[in-house]
Length: 111
Image (cartoon, rainbow, N blue to C red):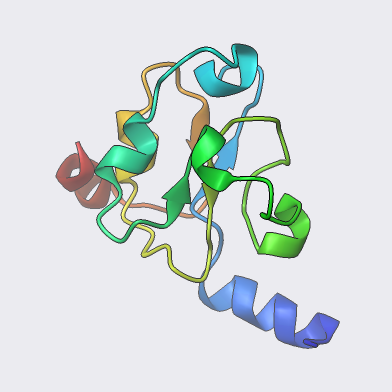
């Protein structure tokens, strides 16, 4: 199990790329919504949305996710995520906010 220093060092080396604003996410607001744009554009399949997660998935904090543990919204596996920013630019409601310093070229490439 990593200690606090290991976690802080890992975050400094590879900060989380996105933070989920649950109140904006279509999948969080409406369990019948079918928006999967963030997962669809992810080049490394680091995002799992809604019912794809299944019942066996651990809470977000245990999973290593950069999102909150909502009922249906996206989880981004920070071990797999390559921090390209595509999920941030693909979200139609602006529910994903880039928290890592992504330069303008990275965001333009993602769009």
